[in-house]
Amino acid sequence: MLVKVMFGATHDPNILYLTRTQLDDNVLVIKLEDNRVLLIVSENDFSRACIRCSHAHVMQHLDFEERCSSVSQIIYTIYKRYGGTSILMPFTFPVGLFVKLKELSPSIPMTIVKNQSFLIERLRKTPMELQYIKDAVRAATVAFSLIEDVLRRSVIELDPAAGCIPKTADKPGSVAFPIFTDTNSTRSKRLSEYPQSSHEAQFIQNDKVPTSQYSGISGMEPEGLETYVSIDNCKYILKDTKTNETVTATYLKNMVRTEMARLGYFLESCIIACGRQACDPSCHGYGVLRPNELIVCDIYPRCIESGYYGDMTRTFLKGTPSPDQQKLMQTVLHAQSMAIHEIIPGKPYRDLNKVVNDLFLSMNYTTKKVGSHWQGFCHGLGHGVGLEIHEPPFIDGEETSDVCTVGTVFTIEPGLYYPSIGGCRVEDVVVVTEDGAEVLGSYSYNWIIP
Image 1 (cartoon, rainbow, N blue to C red):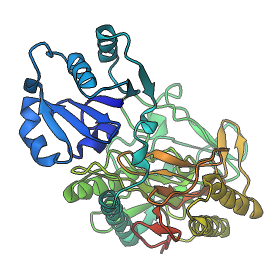
Image 2: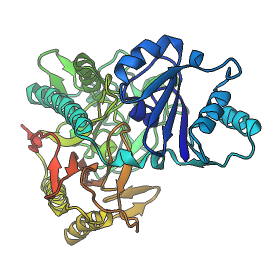
Image 3: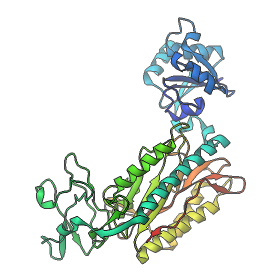
Image 4: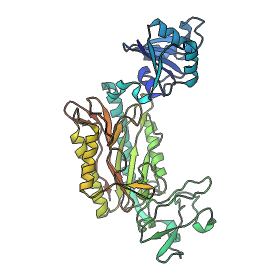
Protein backbone atom coordinates (compact mmCIF):
# COMPACT_ATOMS: atom_id res chain seq x y z
CA MET A 1 0.00 0.00 0.00
CA LEU A 2 1.27 3.46 -0.95
CA VAL A 3 1.49 5.75 2.07
CA LYS A 4 1.55 9.53 1.57
CA VAL A 5 3.25 11.36 4.43
CA MET A 6 3.41 15.06 5.32
CA PHE A 7 4.65 16.87 8.40
CA GLY A 8 4.46 20.57 9.15
CA ALA A 9 2.14 23.47 9.89
CA THR A 10 -1.37 23.76 8.50
CA HIS A 11 -0.42 26.80 6.44
CA ASP A 12 1.06 24.24 4.02
CA PRO A 13 -1.65 23.93 1.30
CA ASN A 14 -1.46 20.13 1.06
CA ILE A 15 -1.67 19.70 4.83
CA LEU A 16 -4.54 22.18 5.11
CA TYR A 17 -6.35 20.36 2.30
CA LEU A 18 -6.37 17.13 4.34
CA THR A 19 -6.89 18.61 7.81
CA ARG A 20 -9.60 21.03 6.57
CA THR A 21 -8.85 23.25 9.54
CA GLN A 22 -5.97 25.32 10.85
CA LEU A 23 -4.16 24.06 13.95
CA ASP A 24 -1.60 25.73 16.19
CA ASP A 25 1.19 23.14 16.15
CA ASN A 26 2.86 20.97 13.54
CA VAL A 27 0.81 17.97 12.48
CA LEU A 28 1.73 14.59 10.99
CA VAL A 29 -0.66 13.78 8.14
CA ILE A 30 -0.79 10.34 6.57
CA LYS A 31 -3.03 9.46 3.64
CA LEU A 32 -3.44 5.80 2.80
CA GLU A 33 -4.04 4.40 -0.66
CA ASP A 34 -7.69 3.70 0.22
CA ASN A 35 -8.13 7.46 0.95
CA ARG A 36 -8.21 7.10 4.74
CA VAL A 37 -6.59 10.09 6.46
CA LEU A 38 -4.68 9.82 9.74
CA LEU A 39 -3.83 12.93 11.76
CA ILE A 40 -1.32 12.79 14.59
CA VAL A 41 -1.54 16.08 16.45
CA SER A 42 -0.15 17.64 19.61
CA GLU A 43 -1.96 17.40 22.93
CA ASN A 44 -2.74 21.10 22.56
CA ASP A 45 -4.59 20.57 19.26
CA PHE A 46 -6.20 17.20 20.04
CA SER A 47 -9.63 18.37 21.27
CA ARG A 48 -10.09 20.86 18.45
CA ALA A 49 -8.94 18.37 15.82
CA CYS A 50 -11.39 15.74 17.09
CA ILE A 51 -14.24 18.23 16.62
CA ARG A 52 -13.20 19.83 13.34
CA CYS A 53 -11.55 16.88 11.57
CA SER A 54 -14.36 14.33 11.75
CA HIS A 55 -13.40 13.03 8.28
CA ALA A 56 -10.06 11.75 9.63
CA HIS A 57 -8.82 9.40 12.32
CA VAL A 58 -7.29 11.78 14.87
CA MET A 59 -4.56 10.59 17.24
CA GLN A 60 -2.06 12.25 19.53
CA HIS A 61 1.52 11.35 20.37
CA LEU A 62 0.40 9.81 23.68
CA ASP A 63 -1.54 7.16 21.75
CA PHE A 64 1.73 5.53 20.76
CA GLU A 65 4.07 3.45 22.89
CA GLU A 66 7.04 5.05 24.63
CA ARG A 67 9.43 3.70 22.01
CA CYS A 68 7.59 5.86 19.46
CA SER A 69 8.88 9.06 21.01
CA SER A 70 9.92 10.64 17.70
CA VAL A 71 7.92 11.54 14.59
CA SER A 72 10.06 9.22 12.45
CA GLN A 73 9.24 6.28 14.76
CA ILE A 74 5.52 7.09 14.58
CA ILE A 75 5.67 7.14 10.77
CA TYR A 76 7.47 3.81 10.74
CA THR A 77 4.94 2.26 13.16
CA ILE A 78 1.95 3.39 11.10
CA TYR A 79 3.66 2.29 7.88
CA LYS A 80 4.05 -1.25 9.29
CA ARG A 81 0.62 -1.31 10.94
CA TYR A 82 -1.22 -0.59 7.70
CA GLY A 83 0.92 -2.79 5.44
CA GLY A 84 2.74 -0.03 3.61
CA THR A 85 4.88 -0.89 0.60
CA SER A 86 6.28 2.56 -0.22
CA ILE A 87 6.18 6.16 1.01
CA LEU A 88 5.46 9.27 -1.04
CA MET A 89 6.46 12.71 0.25
CA PRO A 90 6.18 16.31 -1.05
CA PHE A 91 9.21 18.57 -1.64
CA THR A 92 8.38 20.42 1.58
CA PHE A 93 8.93 17.32 3.72
CA PRO A 94 11.60 18.16 6.36
CA VAL A 95 15.05 16.94 5.31
CA GLY A 96 16.04 16.03 8.87
CA LEU A 97 12.94 13.88 9.30
CA PHE A 98 13.60 12.20 5.95
CA VAL A 99 17.14 11.30 7.06
CA LYS A 100 15.92 9.95 10.42
CA LEU A 101 13.30 7.80 8.68
CA LYS A 102 15.88 6.47 6.24
CA GLU A 103 18.21 5.58 9.11
CA LEU A 104 15.36 3.83 10.92
CA SER A 105 14.56 1.61 7.93
CA PRO A 106 16.83 1.95 4.87
CA SER A 107 14.78 -0.63 2.95
CA ILE A 108 11.58 1.45 2.74
CA PRO A 109 11.12 2.83 -0.82
CA MET A 110 10.67 6.60 -0.43
CA THR A 111 9.88 9.01 -3.25
CA ILE A 112 9.69 12.80 -3.18
CA VAL A 113 7.49 14.63 -5.71
CA LYS A 114 6.62 18.25 -6.45
CA ASN A 115 4.18 19.79 -4.00
CA GLN A 116 1.64 20.61 -6.69
CA SER A 117 1.48 17.04 -7.98
CA PHE A 118 1.41 15.43 -4.53
CA LEU A 119 -2.38 15.58 -4.16
CA ILE A 120 -3.78 15.62 -7.70
CA GLU A 121 -7.31 15.47 -6.28
CA ARG A 122 -6.92 19.15 -5.41
CA LEU A 123 -7.43 19.93 -9.11
CA ARG A 124 -11.13 19.15 -8.99
CA LYS A 125 -12.91 21.36 -6.48
CA THR A 126 -15.69 20.08 -4.23
CA PRO A 127 -18.95 22.08 -3.84
CA MET A 128 -17.66 23.37 -0.49
CA GLU A 129 -14.38 24.51 -2.04
CA LEU A 130 -16.27 26.26 -4.84
CA GLN A 131 -18.28 28.16 -2.24
CA TYR A 132 -15.11 29.21 -0.41
CA ILE A 133 -13.62 30.52 -3.67
CA LYS A 134 -16.86 32.30 -4.63
CA ASP A 135 -16.90 34.02 -1.25
CA ALA A 136 -13.28 35.12 -1.67
CA VAL A 137 -14.00 36.47 -5.16
CA ARG A 138 -16.98 38.34 -3.73
CA ALA A 139 -14.62 39.93 -1.21
CA ALA A 140 -12.45 41.09 -4.11
CA THR A 141 -15.45 42.81 -5.70
CA VAL A 142 -15.89 44.80 -2.48
CA ALA A 143 -12.30 46.00 -2.93
CA PHE A 144 -13.05 47.13 -6.48
CA SER A 145 -16.11 49.03 -5.29
CA LEU A 146 -13.89 50.90 -2.83
CA ILE A 147 -11.27 51.67 -5.47
CA GLU A 148 -13.86 52.84 -7.98
CA ASP A 149 -15.64 54.99 -5.38
CA VAL A 150 -12.38 56.79 -4.55
CA LEU A 151 -11.57 57.36 -8.22
CA ARG A 152 -15.08 58.65 -8.95
CA ARG A 153 -15.10 61.19 -6.13
CA SER A 154 -11.52 62.28 -6.81
CA VAL A 155 -10.78 65.51 -8.62
CA ILE A 156 -7.88 66.23 -10.94
CA GLU A 157 -5.54 68.91 -9.59
CA LEU A 158 -2.19 70.37 -10.52
CA ASP A 159 0.63 68.45 -8.86
CA PRO A 160 2.39 70.70 -6.29
CA ALA A 161 5.65 69.06 -7.37
CA ALA A 162 5.07 69.88 -11.04
CA GLY A 163 6.84 73.19 -10.66
CA CYS A 164 10.19 71.47 -10.43
CA ILE A 165 9.79 69.56 -13.69
CA PRO A 166 10.70 72.19 -16.32
CA LYS A 167 14.45 72.63 -16.05
CA THR A 168 17.38 73.34 -18.28
CA ALA A 169 18.56 69.93 -19.41
CA ASP A 170 21.90 68.79 -20.70
CA LYS A 171 20.26 67.54 -23.88
CA PRO A 172 18.47 69.87 -26.34
CA GLY A 173 14.71 69.36 -26.42
CA SER A 174 14.66 67.61 -23.05
CA VAL A 175 13.55 68.44 -19.54
CA ALA A 176 14.80 66.92 -16.31
CA PHE A 177 12.43 65.64 -13.65
CA PRO A 178 12.85 64.31 -10.10
CA ILE A 179 12.29 60.57 -9.94
CA PHE A 180 11.38 60.85 -6.24
CA THR A 181 8.18 62.88 -5.86
CA ASP A 182 6.00 61.51 -3.07
CA THR A 183 3.44 64.32 -3.03
CA ASN A 184 1.45 62.53 -0.31
CA SER A 185 4.24 62.60 2.25
CA THR A 186 6.38 65.06 4.17
CA ARG A 187 9.33 63.07 2.83
CA SER A 188 8.93 64.72 -0.59
CA LYS A 189 12.09 66.38 -1.73
CA ARG A 190 13.13 68.39 -4.74
CA LEU A 191 15.80 66.95 -6.95
CA SER A 192 18.13 69.81 -6.08
CA GLU A 193 18.11 68.78 -2.41
CA TYR A 194 19.90 65.50 -3.15
CA PRO A 195 23.40 64.97 -4.51
CA GLN A 196 23.36 64.01 -8.17
CA SER A 197 25.52 60.97 -7.39
CA SER A 198 22.86 59.38 -5.17
CA HIS A 199 19.71 60.63 -6.84
CA GLU A 200 20.16 61.27 -10.52
CA ALA A 201 17.78 63.11 -12.78
CA GLN A 202 16.50 61.39 -15.87
CA PHE A 203 15.59 62.97 -19.16
CA ILE A 204 12.25 63.05 -20.89
CA GLN A 205 12.37 63.35 -24.66
CA ASN A 206 9.50 63.71 -27.10
CA ASP A 207 6.99 63.99 -24.23
CA LYS A 208 7.61 60.37 -23.19
CA VAL A 209 9.21 59.06 -20.03
CA PRO A 210 12.06 56.61 -20.72
CA THR A 211 12.28 53.39 -18.73
CA SER A 212 14.87 53.57 -15.97
CA GLN A 213 15.69 51.97 -12.65
CA TYR A 214 15.03 53.83 -9.43
CA SER A 215 18.43 54.79 -8.04
CA GLY A 216 16.95 54.95 -4.56
CA ILE A 217 17.45 56.79 -1.31
CA SER A 218 18.18 54.68 1.75
CA GLY A 219 15.08 54.11 3.87
CA MET A 220 12.68 55.75 1.45
CA GLU A 221 10.14 54.24 -0.94
CA PRO A 222 10.30 55.36 -4.58
CA GLU A 223 6.91 57.05 -4.47
CA GLY A 224 5.92 58.73 -7.72
CA LEU A 225 8.36 56.95 -10.01
CA GLU A 226 7.15 56.61 -13.59
CA THR A 227 3.45 56.51 -12.83
CA TYR A 228 2.60 58.06 -16.17
CA VAL A 229 3.22 57.53 -19.86
CA SER A 230 2.87 61.12 -21.08
CA ILE A 231 4.74 64.11 -19.66
CA ASP A 232 1.44 66.04 -19.75
CA ASN A 233 -0.12 63.68 -17.22
CA CYS A 234 2.72 64.09 -14.72
CA LYS A 235 1.57 67.63 -14.06
CA TYR A 236 -1.60 66.41 -12.40
CA ILE A 237 -2.65 64.31 -9.42
CA LEU A 238 -5.91 62.88 -8.11
CA LYS A 239 -7.24 64.34 -4.86
CA ASP A 240 -9.79 62.38 -2.79
CA THR A 241 -12.50 64.93 -2.01
CA LYS A 242 -13.62 62.94 1.05
CA THR A 243 -10.26 62.99 2.84
CA ASN A 244 -8.40 65.70 0.89
CA GLU A 245 -5.56 63.18 0.44
CA THR A 246 -3.57 62.67 -2.73
CA VAL A 247 -4.56 59.32 -4.24
CA THR A 248 -1.56 57.01 -4.33
CA ALA A 249 -1.25 53.27 -4.82
CA THR A 250 -0.43 52.88 -1.12
CA TYR A 251 -3.44 54.99 -0.13
CA LEU A 252 -5.79 52.65 -2.00
CA LYS A 253 -4.00 49.49 -0.85
CA ASN A 254 -4.29 50.45 2.82
CA MET A 255 -7.97 51.20 2.37
CA VAL A 256 -8.55 47.84 0.67
CA ARG A 257 -6.52 45.90 3.26
CA THR A 258 -8.54 47.41 6.10
CA GLU A 259 -11.83 46.43 4.48
CA MET A 260 -10.61 42.92 3.66
CA ALA A 261 -9.60 42.41 7.29
CA ARG A 262 -13.03 43.57 8.42
CA LEU A 263 -14.59 40.92 6.17
CA GLY A 264 -12.29 38.19 7.48
CA TYR A 265 -9.82 38.13 4.59
CA PHE A 266 -6.08 38.59 4.51
CA LEU A 267 -4.54 40.60 1.67
CA GLU A 268 -0.83 39.88 1.82
CA SER A 269 -0.23 41.88 -1.33
CA CYS A 270 -2.09 43.29 -4.30
CA ILE A 271 -1.40 45.22 -7.49
CA ILE A 272 -2.45 48.81 -8.06
CA ALA A 273 -0.12 50.00 -10.81
CA CYS A 274 -0.52 53.07 -12.98
CA GLY A 275 0.98 54.19 -16.28
CA ARG A 276 4.39 52.71 -17.00
CA GLN A 277 4.31 50.65 -13.82
CA ALA A 278 1.25 48.86 -15.22
CA CYS A 279 3.35 47.75 -18.20
CA ASP A 280 5.19 45.36 -15.89
CA PRO A 281 2.70 42.60 -14.91
CA SER A 282 4.71 41.86 -11.76
CA CYS A 283 4.96 45.47 -10.53
CA HIS A 284 2.77 45.91 -7.46
CA GLY A 285 2.61 49.66 -7.95
CA TYR A 286 3.55 52.64 -5.80
CA GLY A 287 3.41 56.41 -5.86
CA VAL A 288 0.80 58.87 -7.06
CA LEU A 289 -1.91 57.79 -9.50
CA ARG A 290 -2.24 60.05 -12.51
CA PRO A 291 -5.28 61.00 -14.59
CA ASN A 292 -5.67 59.71 -18.15
CA GLU A 293 -3.46 56.69 -17.42
CA LEU A 294 -4.46 53.03 -17.29
CA ILE A 295 -4.49 51.67 -13.71
CA VAL A 296 -4.23 47.88 -13.33
CA CYS A 297 -5.81 46.63 -10.08
CA ASP A 298 -5.29 42.96 -9.19
CA ILE A 299 -6.88 41.87 -5.88
CA TYR A 300 -6.42 38.36 -4.45
CA PRO A 301 -7.73 38.03 -0.87
CA ARG A 302 -7.34 34.85 1.20
CA CYS A 303 -10.02 33.81 3.68
CA ILE A 304 -8.49 33.70 7.15
CA GLU A 305 -10.80 30.88 8.23
CA SER A 306 -10.87 28.55 5.19
CA GLY A 307 -7.52 29.44 3.62
CA TYR A 308 -9.00 29.73 0.11
CA TYR A 309 -8.17 32.53 -2.31
CA GLY A 310 -10.18 34.64 -4.69
CA ASP A 311 -8.65 36.55 -7.61
CA MET A 312 -9.89 39.33 -9.85
CA THR A 313 -8.33 42.07 -11.97
CA ARG A 314 -9.86 45.19 -13.45
CA THR A 315 -8.25 48.10 -15.24
CA PHE A 316 -9.49 51.65 -14.71
CA LEU A 317 -8.74 55.08 -16.14
CA LYS A 318 -9.67 58.32 -14.42
CA GLY A 319 -10.22 61.03 -17.01
CA THR A 320 -10.28 60.74 -20.78
CA PRO A 321 -8.66 57.81 -22.62
CA SER A 322 -6.74 58.17 -25.84
CA PRO A 323 -7.82 56.23 -28.96
CA ASP A 324 -4.89 53.85 -28.42
CA GLN A 325 -5.95 53.18 -24.83
CA GLN A 326 -9.53 52.55 -25.93
CA LYS A 327 -8.45 50.06 -28.59
CA LEU A 328 -6.14 48.29 -26.14
CA MET A 329 -8.88 47.87 -23.53
CA GLN A 330 -11.55 46.79 -26.01
CA THR A 331 -9.21 44.17 -27.46
CA VAL A 332 -8.37 42.70 -24.05
CA LEU A 333 -12.04 42.60 -23.00
CA HIS A 334 -12.94 40.85 -26.27
CA ALA A 335 -10.07 38.38 -25.80
CA GLN A 336 -11.27 37.41 -22.34
CA SER A 337 -14.84 36.92 -23.53
CA MET A 338 -13.66 34.75 -26.43
CA ALA A 339 -11.47 32.58 -24.19
CA ILE A 340 -14.23 31.97 -21.64
CA HIS A 341 -16.68 30.98 -24.37
CA GLU A 342 -14.12 28.50 -25.75
CA ILE A 343 -14.00 26.53 -22.48
CA ILE A 344 -15.59 23.08 -22.66
CA PRO A 345 -14.61 19.78 -21.02
CA GLY A 346 -11.79 18.16 -22.96
CA LYS A 347 -10.51 21.41 -24.50
CA PRO A 348 -6.69 21.59 -24.34
CA TYR A 349 -5.50 24.54 -22.26
CA ARG A 350 -3.00 25.50 -24.95
CA ASP A 351 -5.91 26.05 -27.37
CA LEU A 352 -7.39 28.70 -25.06
CA ASN A 353 -4.06 30.50 -25.06
CA LYS A 354 -3.90 30.27 -28.88
CA VAL A 355 -7.33 31.87 -29.29
CA VAL A 356 -6.15 34.93 -27.38
CA ASN A 357 -2.76 35.10 -29.11
CA ASP A 358 -4.37 34.87 -32.54
CA LEU A 359 -6.78 37.70 -31.72
CA PHE A 360 -3.98 39.94 -30.49
CA LEU A 361 -1.91 39.27 -33.61
CA SER A 362 -4.91 40.02 -35.84
CA MET A 363 -5.13 43.42 -34.13
CA ASN A 364 -1.39 44.01 -34.68
CA TYR A 365 -0.51 43.57 -31.02
CA THR A 366 2.75 41.67 -31.17
CA THR A 367 4.76 40.29 -28.27
CA LYS A 368 8.48 40.97 -28.29
CA LYS A 369 11.40 41.79 -26.04
CA VAL A 370 12.57 45.39 -26.16
CA GLY A 371 15.80 45.85 -24.26
CA SER A 372 15.43 43.91 -21.03
CA HIS A 373 11.63 44.05 -20.93
CA TRP A 374 8.84 42.25 -22.75
CA GLN A 375 5.88 44.04 -24.24
CA GLY A 376 2.62 42.70 -25.64
CA PHE A 377 0.98 39.61 -24.14
CA CYS A 378 3.86 38.54 -21.93
CA HIS A 379 2.33 36.13 -19.40
CA GLY A 380 0.14 33.05 -19.30
CA LEU A 381 -3.59 33.26 -19.87
CA GLY A 382 -4.42 31.93 -16.42
CA HIS A 383 -3.70 29.74 -13.43
CA GLY A 384 -5.52 27.58 -10.93
CA VAL A 385 -6.90 29.12 -7.73
CA GLY A 386 -7.66 27.43 -4.43
CA LEU A 387 -5.53 27.01 -1.32
CA GLU A 388 -2.77 28.67 -3.35
CA ILE A 389 -3.12 31.80 -5.42
CA HIS A 390 -1.13 30.12 -8.20
CA GLU A 391 -1.71 26.38 -8.48
CA PRO A 392 -2.38 23.91 -11.31
CA PRO A 393 -3.66 24.07 -13.94
CA PHE A 394 -1.51 26.69 -15.64
CA ILE A 395 -3.11 28.06 -18.80
CA ASP A 396 -0.32 28.91 -21.21
CA GLY A 397 1.05 27.95 -24.60
CA GLU A 398 3.09 25.00 -23.36
CA GLU A 399 2.71 21.82 -25.41
CA THR A 400 1.06 19.64 -22.79
CA SER A 401 -1.78 17.14 -22.91
CA ASP A 402 -3.67 18.88 -20.09
CA VAL A 403 -7.31 19.61 -20.89
CA CYS A 404 -10.26 21.35 -19.24
CA THR A 405 -11.88 19.05 -16.68
CA VAL A 406 -15.23 19.46 -14.94
CA GLY A 407 -14.74 20.96 -11.50
CA THR A 408 -11.39 22.56 -12.30
CA VAL A 409 -11.06 26.21 -11.26
CA PHE A 410 -8.73 28.70 -12.94
CA THR A 411 -8.43 32.32 -14.02
CA ILE A 412 -8.75 33.81 -17.49
CA GLU A 413 -6.65 36.98 -17.52
CA PRO A 414 -5.47 38.28 -20.90
CA GLY A 415 -3.41 41.46 -20.86
CA LEU A 416 -1.49 43.79 -23.14
CA TYR A 417 1.44 45.95 -22.07
CA TYR A 418 3.04 48.70 -24.14
CA PRO A 419 5.07 51.51 -22.52
CA SER A 420 3.87 54.04 -25.10
CA ILE A 421 0.20 53.31 -24.27
CA GLY A 422 0.03 51.67 -20.87
CA GLY A 423 -0.83 48.27 -19.49
CA CYS A 424 -4.20 46.60 -19.09
CA ARG A 425 -5.43 43.26 -17.80
CA VAL A 426 -8.87 41.81 -17.06
CA GLU A 427 -9.20 38.69 -14.89
CA ASP A 428 -12.02 36.49 -13.67
CA VAL A 429 -12.12 33.08 -11.97
CA VAL A 430 -14.05 30.34 -13.78
CA VAL A 431 -15.02 26.75 -13.04
CA VAL A 432 -15.38 24.19 -15.82
CA THR A 433 -18.92 22.75 -15.97
CA GLU A 434 -20.55 20.07 -18.11
CA ASP A 435 -21.76 22.78 -20.50
CA GLY A 436 -18.78 25.12 -20.56
CA ALA A 437 -17.61 27.56 -17.91
CA GLU A 438 -19.19 29.46 -15.04
CA VAL A 439 -17.67 32.75 -13.92
CA LEU A 440 -17.34 32.77 -10.13
CA GLY A 441 -18.35 36.26 -9.08
CA SER A 442 -18.91 39.33 -11.18
CA TYR A 443 -17.95 42.97 -11.32
CA SER A 444 -18.56 45.63 -13.95
CA TYR A 445 -16.15 45.87 -16.88
CA ASN A 446 -16.73 49.64 -17.17
CA TRP A 447 -13.25 51.09 -17.02
CA ILE A 448 -13.56 54.79 -17.86
CA ILE A 449 -14.20 56.94 -14.78
CA PRO A 450 -14.99 60.57 -15.67
